[in-house]
Image (tube, rainbow, N blue to C red):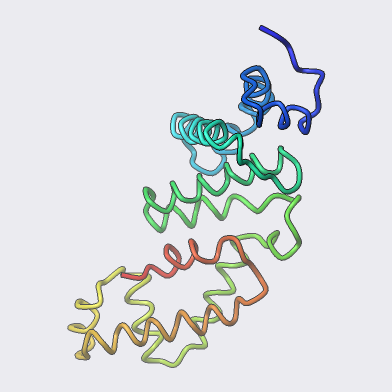
Length: 199
């Protein structure tokens, strides 16, 4: 096997775009371990992490001819790993566990300062926002998030229509979203699905 270990990432990328197998192998060997280790921190599963990273490399090879990377290869691969892990968590992990796992992890220091806020601080900010909601809206929101009741169950418990429940939750999310404006960007859509538990 030809060794390309002496080449820079940019040089490897140029070769990769031409379909060079050895360049792909070098990138794989150079970053596989780091990506899996990073993924394990998020998913808490070595097997799942290995599968997710493998998926990234398959995609990298399949898109090699049209691949456009802004910034460094390392940051691109780590960002791809993070995004795929978060999508995996979104699909497979219970909301409470999701919060606990993400709270242990903060965004890479390489990201801008707005994205470097800890998730614990974010969670505290959301709780403060909820405490300031109108009483009825807060009650509906908490039944949805804390007790994880469906719209129908909340409507029955409070003696209101499902439409009213949906509107109250929608309004509460809007208020919270506006209060978070500028604090985070990458994680807001995922956090809203799991922290706020829309049913």
